[in-house]
Image (cartoon, rainbow, N blue to C red; front, side, top):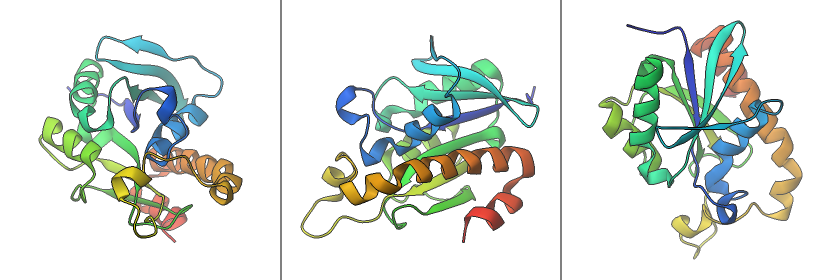
Length: 188
């Protein structure tokens, strides 16, 4: 039975040491969307809260483990709420997009992103929405795996609040107006 509920997952790692890193930009957008509500722990090993977007029930979620293990908890949460992959939006960092750039798509490969790989494995499909938050590639010789776990630079921090706000707006547009409309507005 398909629910009209949406599940919006912000990818990231649990722990204060990761809170303001590039890898946690998805969770930063979730926190912005949940500004006036509190999270509670769910038995699926996620933190969740409920909001409404354009009249639609939405569960905002953050996993309580590491990003590369996010598929199991997210699938358990989706099963609990009877949310199919067609109503799943995953917000994640994207190395191959310039910082402060947003791209929205449905489906596709994981592009080496272990969080997406875990989700695709557990849902047995890559067909879910992705809100790709560009963090850019690191300058050589910095390893991308190290780069994503570092805090944003001072110049990036000056643009971060606007970037997060636009990410939240992109989620709202996708739910309210659909993929084509959201892509026209944000995939510029």
